[in-house]
Image (cartoon, rainbow, N blue to C red; front, top):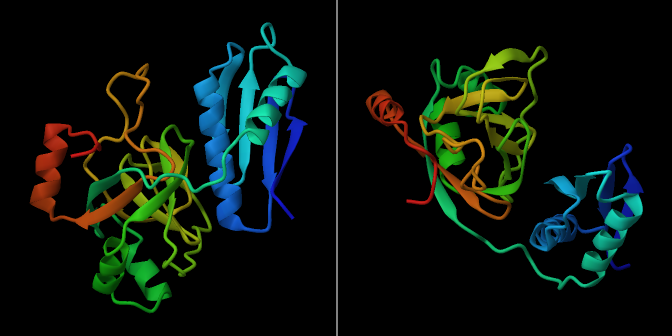
Length: 237
């Protein structure tokens, strides 16, 4: 059965569109290519757009648009899309200080996975993680790897404040926290690089998009301190 689009109202000024298909990669790639098409179309009523693994949420200005108008655009762009995978995109190197205060859960996660901590670091850094989507907290890259089968449980009691740059695991996913925020993901390291643009109004708030890859590179404390003091942003080198 070919993939289909399920669109429904989500509040007074929102729509939730889900891609229905048995294949995970098809759901993800279709969702992301549809989101790109909406952004390229740039309808005057569009307020916000978030695409995840298999759903797309958009909100609209009720003065300029409505549910029917937004639904019609989604269906037109979906029917006119071309099949194909999301482009590979960039591979960005992310220097990470693993363990210690920077990654307080590293040893516990290694124990749960029946691995030495050094081996866990090797596995985290040996293959890039693919960005599946970018969401909240603002600019957070949600990443996966096809070869990563370990299931890392979340914390029973989430932290009230996770430092920016924290590299964290949950289930089979990895993220980097861009800003101070609560969180229950397991912290294994921290990057000294700033994820967000210095100008909050910048169109390029972060340097990565769905389809890009993040390669974690282990660094030591002196290198971490050097990069942190330089206020370097994560971007293509």
